[in-house]
Length: 279
Image (cartoon, rainbow, N blue to C red; front, top):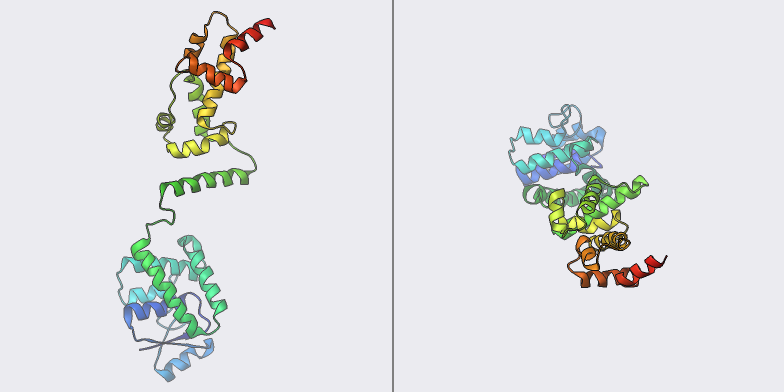
């Protein structure tokens, strides 16, 4: 069977020959001729014209020629329906119909630009649509970033880019809620995992994104900072012993409290209290 259409194909006039050879006639001969001679050459060569006005195999309403082939030959393969939507969106410049359409158009236009010979272009296009069909049939629900770590990294990066584009770092609702939780429970044993459940946020994401909204500190560093700030307030009240202050600020014991305080303040709590009392 011979099929004829006009030269310089990009979308429909590559997709349709692929469809013909893969699902209708594997030995089909595809012929490209100048636009004005398609119908006359069809009669001369005994070929079926397609994707030109005034013939059977062409556009109908919002459907492209690829759609008509599928209807005409009653091709029921669900993967073909997926491919058809992408082809239709790319061929009619309605890219909103399929998110893959801009990519198909870009690759098709690039192939056509790089390959002036229509028959060489067709062979390359056949490979392109073989790949698109395999994706639609077997891989459509897979993502390039399969691991949770990769997806998390992309989520954090996307949020960073959105904030950067906005020109202002906007504190999300979860960060505000988290700050309130920490303030309310500063003297308790706080777990990022438990807090993430309360906020309904992935704990790994929360851990990575935390520093952006909390003074460039990690979760642990921020908690220690708040506890030391509260301890400094209590050190000004002589009625509280160091053991009591350690307990009230969430440290496991006085020794732990002393180590953290000295590391952050450069001196022990008792030395800090004595110095403050002299002022």
